[in-house]
Length: 131
Ligand code: SF4
Ligand code: SF4
Image 1 (tube, rainbow, N blue to C red):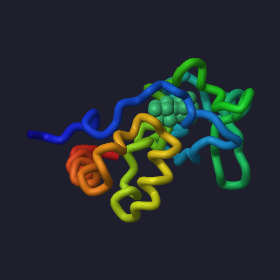
Image 2: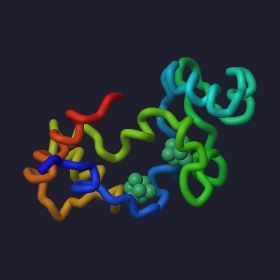
Image 3: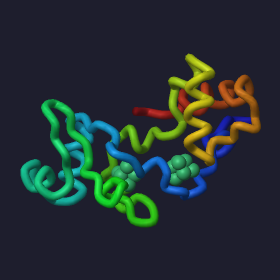
């Protein structure tokens, strides 16, 4: 049977991953995708939605969450790749501590599978991804 992301993750829509003091950092492709999605140039995007600190580009935080969060992500097609990847993250394969950390902050991770089985499925899932 082919492994599927749904075998290891079922988003509970808690919104925890979109809350905090910072957001994920965006790379050039993320910026381009978001500009295209919103029909804005970089200056417009920056003014309205971004927090730029030196070389680090993040999304603004409003009321303790990402500016695009409103009962869920409101910019699915234009969101950064790190948001798309979360929480099915390859770092969990390298270190069980990462599995523990991610699964304790994301209730959607099916940690009841146990680390070994979780990693077996995660490996299959990551093979199919193209980030
Ligand atoms: S923390 Fe996990 S379960 Fe909650 S919204 Fe984010 S991805 Fe979904
Ligand atoms: S872009 Fe969407 S998924 Fe990413 S932090 Fe903002 S609201 Fe959450």
